[in-house]
Length: 148
Picture (cartoon, rainbow, N blue to C red):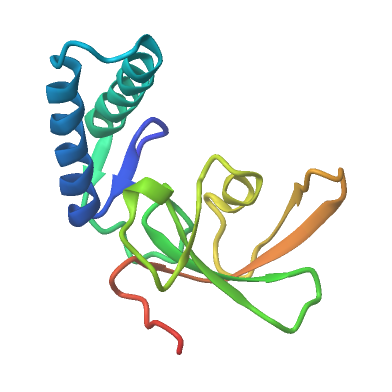
């Protein structure tokens, strides 16, 4: 479903980011701002334009158990008994308070992208240590059952 340059967004996140972009464009036409504020707005506008151009909106990934953006992943680290569940996507691309969001470009997200149920992947943490993580489940966002 997603290419390497694609970004998965929920419908609500896409609309929120488009509204932010409209506001930024309007603010850029407002004279009298200091150079720093103008530069910050311009950088954010360019980031949003790029993000929205690459967006795949609300289209659920295939329910094939493969970890990819837009999937809710349940994992177990090393031999820990506890599991962790999170959305693989961009923080500003998902409207979720119930789930942590990890970017596909993060060390963890990069290691898990393409993994199938039961596969063990490894990645390095900032300290230089290697961590093993097992993918237990991958389901499309919106089809997952929130834990309470």
